[in-house]
Length: 317
Image (tube, rainbow, N blue to C red; front, side, top):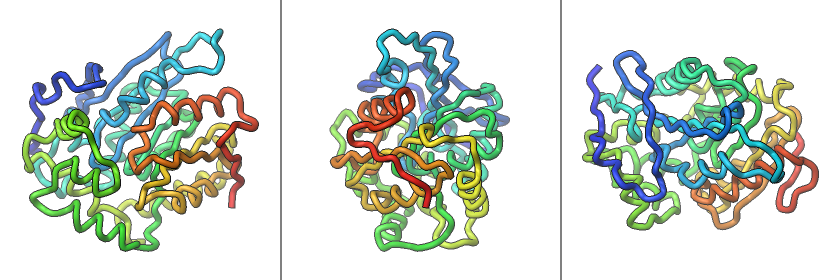
């Protein structure tokens, strides 16, 4: 397989992202991931990004996931794993756009989880990180404990809003727009430092095959790849006792035109035992940019449950 590898110097001196990458040798390809821990790291947070970002998106969440607790006497033993999908971040970028498909990305994540032997996982997802990531627990439920879900969906091929069609048309062509422009299209405008960070993996358009392909992979009808797997995962959550209500936290960025309040409230009704649901009014599609608030809401739910200001307890539909 032909692929490109972004030069390391592109990632030097990124603001707010001091983490040293680790690498998983996966056949011909190399997948990058951040691996940070406190204590023995027995409590794992697996953080999955989406389009058109990379693990840099989690720079505001990683320190909070490692350190935040509502109990000052608690000794923390946490580990944060934040991989870059192939085609993104420091991971290798196959040269042919058609290489990138739902199973290609999903199977790579399953191999990473097995390689690292991750257990006691809190899965943290957004955008394609959710579309793909939320199908992982049904493969081996014993590895997973909790979910933190930001703007995403479990797509089953129904419906095609004009906003979605406009996004596909804007993000798919060659040459592909700058990453800052793509993010602005979904309502999030970047500072100069942030734009440099998000653009770092892509020296030129030839590196952006993965960026072009995710919009083309959006499930507009039931015959598209990935739909059957997503249908199975929706059934899994509706029937499974793996996740109790206190194990599932959904945080919605309200300003998102693609996957905002209607999509997220719909997703909240999928889980057999319900979930906890919160909104960040000013947040866009990229909710991780408000990540410190997301983590604090989630940890409050996980550690205390019950009634929490600004958080609703949702029941299944």
